[in-house]
Amino acid sequence: MKMFFFKMLAIFCAFSAFVLVFFFLEKPQTIPEPEISPDQRLQCVSYTPFINDEGPWTWGVVIPDKRIEDDLKILSGRFDCVRTYSVGGLEYVPYAAEKLGMKLMLGIWVNANPIDTKREISTAIELAKKYPETIKAIIVGNETLLRKEVPPTLLIEYINEVKAKLPSIPVTYADVWEFWLKYSQLAPHVDFVTIHILPYWEDDPVGIEGAMNHVEKIYKKLQSKFPQNKILIGETGWPSWGRPREAAFASPINQARYVRGFVALAKGKGWDYNLIEAFDQPWKRNNEGAVGGYWGLYNETRLEKGVFEGPVSFINYQKWFLLSALILSMIFILIAFCHFSGTLQLIQIAVWCFAFTTSFLYQLYDNHLILRNGMEYFWATLLFILSSLCFFAGVPLLLKKQISHRYTAILNALKLCTLLLLVVTSLGFVFDGRYRSFPTAVFLIPSLLCLIWNDPKASSWKLLLQALFVSSLITLWNETFYNLQAIGWIVVCLIPTLRILRPRDFFKKPPFVLCLGSVVVIFASLLIRKQLMESASLVEICAIQTHFLCEIRDEIGYFIYLQFFGRVSLILACISLALSKKSMADLAFALSFSGLILYNFDIAALALALSLVSLSIHQSKGRQDILSGVIINENNS
Image (cartoon, rainbow, N blue to C red; front, top):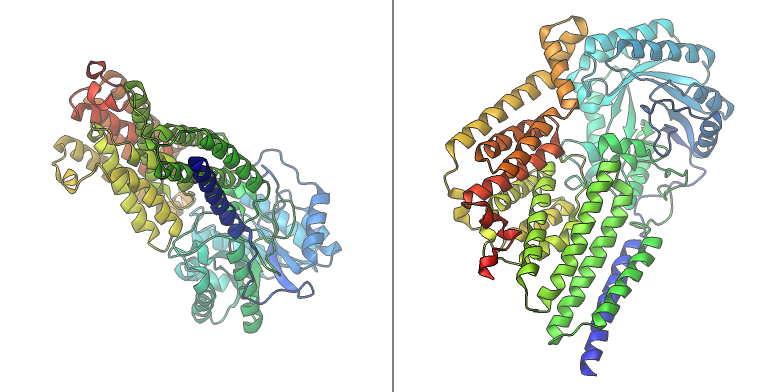
């Protein structure tokens, strides 16, 4: 009877903690910045009409005129103007804007393909002549110099061409503020300077508390640089969801704070501005990670997100809360049928269940916002399966049950899988972390299992643990201590290393040939990336004349597109594991850096992790010792 009481008490406490967590996340918070009332007119907002899987590069997509008109009806309730980025397929926008009494800043999409650009210019000129009272400005190119698609000389030619044919309509070019400072020669060719100020996306991200000061500082800097030009803030805003960048945290609350604060600041200073953006755009997640799809003032279904007025909650869980509560209840019912040797074990199991359920459901909710394609859904499913298996595998350990040799093999297999996937994921943040979300929640239970289960032969995995430790430190350096989500991820990565790694493990002399080969590959890959693939001067040369370096650049770009460097290193790593060839493992390890540097991040990260497993086999003097993490030597039984 006494033990039953303690069981019920532990279940009640864990469930209460669970409810409090979700209650706190859902509780609306009052925003300190002044509200934007419905009768307060806002200047301009970026508009793209895509929904679901549609995007500007979706083959054959046709935007219905009715959707455009319905969208602009919603926006006309608050905004006087919309900004577009292309005219392709959006020829109806000027008509709908004129019909609703709105103004339009018409965008021309300038890219590396001169035929596409000329077509955009021709269409824009036709529309501007047809709707001269509606189109208030032409924006020739958006962040084209940032993307290094055309040189500034060619961009100036495009701007002058449009100005010559539309002398009565102001013409400008839009880019992030740093690139206006870098390419100030554009200023004499435009009627006004259009700058993008996005504190979240700055190279040194700015948190919400310092965002308004940052915007004002940048505006003054550009104003002093271009005293003869009027300045338009062509893009500014804040995302409602996505990974943090240092102190810049994406959330509905911060989005509301930024927009309300900026509108008040711009009104007081008399600035011209355009907010980004009207509606959430899921297609942008393919280019900018999860955060790219959540800059809208309205969600994808065209509902207000609470940005303008009223209190705002961190997130709306609703059905997710109910689902998680149901799962938690079922798990706790199972607890009631477990046999415990004491109250401490009961508390441990209750905490274990609570940690699993909250992390599992939080990651499930996060995934429905951030996953973009079939491969990411497959990867997420793999991690959920691993987390679930680790949860159930950890229960007998907490209950101090006698562990059989077969069960030991299962635990070691789960531990090796956890380390392998942690290394792959962690390398992604080192080489391509800007747009990635932290899968901290789904790795929490597997990471804790690695700490709980300490196999005597786990030293065989030290190469993986060293890679995990080093990549975690690099991630911390990149993200800084301001990024609390990054800190959480790093803690989860470091947990498995606590009982195994020692300082002396990092001072062992590495193989000379392996180090030399890796250094050569890294140097060559960096040379290709910086001097060929990302060279602004080469872009300018290739736009003017045919050059052999341009042909080489195109060929390498094609290999990168095919994921050639990552695939080759992955094949070599698999061969080294299958045939137990150390030379293959060395080669795979070195070549994987070429994939990591040349944009084949995920495949190359997997190749590097597998090559470390293969090298560990040879370092441990035989396959049997390393795979004692997976296959127990039956002689010991």
